Each structure stands twice: as structure tokens, then as C-alpha cells.
Amino acid sequence: MRTIEAEEITKAVARLCKETNYNLGQDVIRAYKESLAAEESEVAQEILEQLIQNAEIAQEKEVPICQDTGMAVVFLELGQDVNIVGDDVTAAVNEGVKKGYQEGYLRKSVVSDPLIERKNTEDNTPAVIHTTIVPGDELKITVAPKGFGSENMSQMKMFNPTAGAEKVKDFVVQVVEEAGPNPCPPIVVGVGVGGTLDKAALLAKKSLLRDIGEHNSDPKYKSLEEEILNAVNETGVGPQGLGGKTTALAVNIEEYPTHIAGLPVVVNINCHVARHKTVVL
Amino acid sequence: MAEIKLETPVTESEIRNLKAGDKIKLSGVVYTARDAAHERLIEALNQGRDLPFDMQGAALYYVGPAPAKPGEVIGSAGPTTSYRMDPFTPQLLKNGLKIMIGKGNRNQKVMDTMKEEGAVYLAATGGAAALISERIKEMKVIAYPDLGTEAVRKLRVKNLPLVCVIDSTGKNLYNR
Ligand code: SF4
Image (cartoon, rainbow over the protein chains, first blue to last red):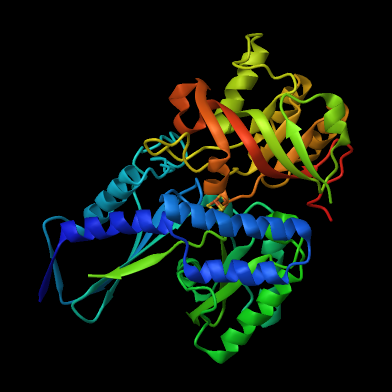
């Protein structure tokens, strides 16, 4: 049994909240540059140039890449041989979010009651926390702040079991076209296929934790990802919906076994501010 | 493609000259308002009260900035999605609003009123919030401070990079 102090979790989460909001991954910046080289439209080029410059400014000045610093989504992979002392895990994570968003001058965008009162909690808590218990004696923490311009453009559909890959592809393209400029394209498209309704949503969200360029390990799904990415980019939506070749930087699919009678599909849209970072305690 | 330098407040003829697809560098005073502030502006108009700023020829930016770090004018300040403002917009256009800055599509009623009144909708780059905040030289909360990030702010901007998406003839770059 290994012991981890809850305070260590708080510190790590606070640091990740700040770092993900200030420092865009090199994978995303590389993807911007590749897209810039491929774009022919002047407006599309101008926008991609702005995004590259924006990422540099944010990193250098330690200010948020985007003013929507998101709702904090936190993934925990907790080793079953870990004993956490000092506080409960949920409280420790939320304390970290509070600390990170306050110290980091990040925008507080969370309301307590979603439907009736909608009162800002003023510290961006609570986080959305997904915990998995895994073998071992380590705790892996991933923080992925999620902006809602893109979250709002996500959709789900319960397909017939025999619908096939082509129908799923059409659905993803439709979701992207309907979203148009709203999710701040270029976007990253997360697709969860299989399981139950809730599982498919979680798979879609998890697929957004990949670096750009990282594919599904199954070659069949990898080629489907590439095929859908091409189709999405052929829509011509382009950067900020103003036309161009770069509508998405990546399409990521995660799959899971499902019931004989169904085929749940969730499309979770992320913007180009594809924020996520992991530490292992 | 034209790159146009524009200074607020603007006249109707300046606005009528802008075309969808123009790249614009905007300077001068810009006011901020999001959902809650729009609600209050409309309420003031309906009750015959004065608006907190002069709407004639004004530019309105849909933004809820991040908190400013010590020593900074403003925190990161990129555009929010505009369609949520659509129900309130026609009335503001009728009261002189000439430039709207945000991201994403507008509804037909907004576009029709823009045509009638002579107004434009300009897109700021969603997510380029740190870059945009560097172009904001002064910031002052002038109304509804209780709304926090959603309070109405008076900004002085210099060369804010924008693209004209919907012009005063109704041409819309989103519907290519
Ligand atoms: S969708 Fe992304 S880039 Fe656009 S405003 Fe939201 S967080 Fe920022």
C-alpha cells in the first residue's frame, strides 16, 4: 500500500488547471502550422496566423489561451494499492480547481444549479470527475478544461445495430456542418461508439485527451478516423466557419462492445484550444 | 481582398461601404455586452430610461473577459457565440447600433434589421483571446458591475483584427 496525501492531489490539479489554460500543446501548434501551409484562402491563413501568435502570447505572458477557461473535467486513474489520506479525493480535486482558477486569473464559468437558479459558484467548482480504479500504486491525474462554445455543438444518436460505418460517418459530418462557426473551428472531433448511452459519451470525451496525430490502435478504426477527417474537411466550413480546408484538426474514435440491439454514437466537439495535461503521482 | 482601417464611432456611409469578406482593423471605443447585459439594456429601453452609453454609431463586442492579472488592462478577451444575443439585437440596431463583434451565425430577423438600419457584423477569432487582449488599450466597467464578467465595459482598442461576415446588404460569408 502506498500513501498519497490529498494535498498533493490538490496541488497537482491546481497546477494543471493553470498550465492547460496557458500552454497549448505542441501537437496543436504543429497542426496549426501544417494547416496554414495547406490553406489557400487569405482569411483562413490570417486566422491560423492569429491562432499561432495567440498561443505564443498566452504562453509567454502566462494568460489564458481563451477567455473561456472551461469547466474542469478531471480524469483520475487510481491504483488499487494507493491509500489517500488527509481529505477525500473529490474534495481534494475541487480544492485544486478552486486554487488553480483563483490563483491563475482564470474565468469562473460554473453555475451551481443548472436549471433554476444558475448562480455562479465563483470558484469554477465543482469539477466533472471521472475515476477508474486500475492495478498498481500510482495516481494518474488528467485535467481537461472544456469550453462550452464547442460542448454545446455536441450531439448523440442511438443508431440501428446494422447502420454501419457509412451512416456514422454521415452523422459526424452532419454534426460538424450544423455546428458551423459556433465551436470555433478548426475543431477536434471526439466520437464514442458502442457501450450504453453514458458510456458512448464518456468514450467521446476520453478520445479528446489524445494528442493531435495520435490514432486509434486498431487499424480499422484508424482508417475510419482518417476517412471521416477528410469528409469533415471537405465540407469547406474552414477556420472560424469562414471557409477553407481546415475544419477539423483531428477525428478521434473510441469504441466499446455494445448490446446486440443497439449502436450508440456520441459526437463530442472540442475547439482548437484542445487543452489537456496529465501528471502521475 | 481589402484590408480596411475603421475608427469608431462610425457613420452609416462608412458601414454601407464594408463588404462581407473584408479584413478590418478596428480602433476606437468599443462597448462590451453579453446575455445578461443585453437583457438589462432592453429593459432600460422599454422603460424609457437612458442607456449607459451612446448607442448612436456604437460598436458592441460580445465578450466575457477572463480576470485581469495585476498590471494588465484586461484578461484574455475573445468573442462569445453571438446567436444568444439575437432576440435583443433588432431593438439595439433601431437605436443606432452599427457594429456587432462576435462569432457564429445570426438569425434572419437580425440580418433583416441590419439591412434596414445599415449595420455590420464582424467576426473576431474565437480562441485568439490573448492576442485580442493585447489590442485592448483601456478598459473601464461602466454599467452593471454586479454582473462580473458580464458587466458592460468601455474598451479602447487599437487595430483589433476582424473579418466582416455579414454586411449591410445581407451578404453572409458563413453561407458560401
Ligand atoms: S469554443 Fe473553445 S476557442 Fe471557442 S470560445 Fe469556447 S473555449 Fe474558446
